[in-house]
Image 1 (tube, helix red, strand yellow):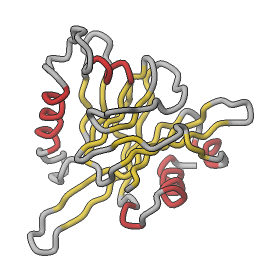
Image 2 (image 1 turned 120 degrees about the vertical axis):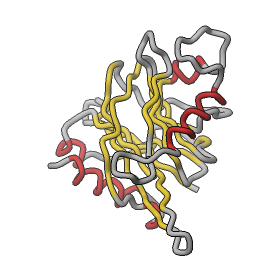
Image 3 (image 1 turned 60 degrees about the vertical axis):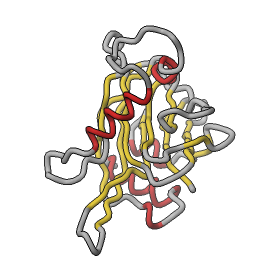
Image 4 (image 1 turned 60 degrees about the horizontal axis):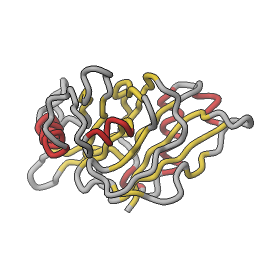
Length: 203
């Protein structure tokens, strides 16, 4: 099974609103996880980690929605799903996805971040970081500026990959969102091994 076939299947099964069905899927890059993976707003008042993702680099695939304003002709892009596979697509396809966290958590209002909990927490402590960002507001401003540029095809950029700790290589995949709350779903095999994480937004 091709990864995009799996992504389309997951989108149709788990994205509630037809308007949020992705127009295209992209491999966005690898996320470095050291402690726990979090899908949230840039500065959540509370959060829960998504599953027991093993430390290391993990591929992240995004479902991108593109819209064009009828009057201005301006195109916009946002992300309605992020998927982190930890097994082969055909193995994941037959698994059941269930809530990885007990409740929804804040997303947006403009951006969603997929990142390591340690990297996120560093922006809320007095620890010295090697990222060059003074605080989370500076990071968000950088993300906003990068997203304002065009992608290699000349279209609105749908995501950016930003290293937030030069020493460890911890990074954040940041993207525009159109939802208020974040959901994280997980799939496991019969032995309890994590097969994949599906991050989606909801109103």
